[in-house]
Image (cartoon, rainbow, N blue to C red):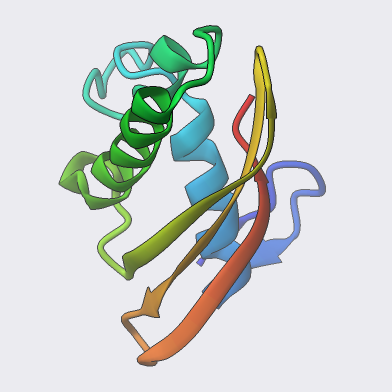
Length: 114
């Protein structure tokens, strides 16, 4: 349970998970003062030219961020990540996985990571 970062209204369940995923993936590691390990490495990759190697690094950074205990996403087990739209400096992805509290299979769409 948490608060919507735009409206201040209460968020629960999958809506709260979606907001937390977006926050983790859009926060560069090392930028949170009291939680230096929070975030993802995506900003290290986002301005590099796309190549097959870049895509592998991108997917690895996404999964690493979701699985990092510091990020507090233990209630989601990612099984697949798909890059949708990307250009230099911008990327959007979808994530598939299991929402652990309910065992529900989820597809979380249109997460903008840059």
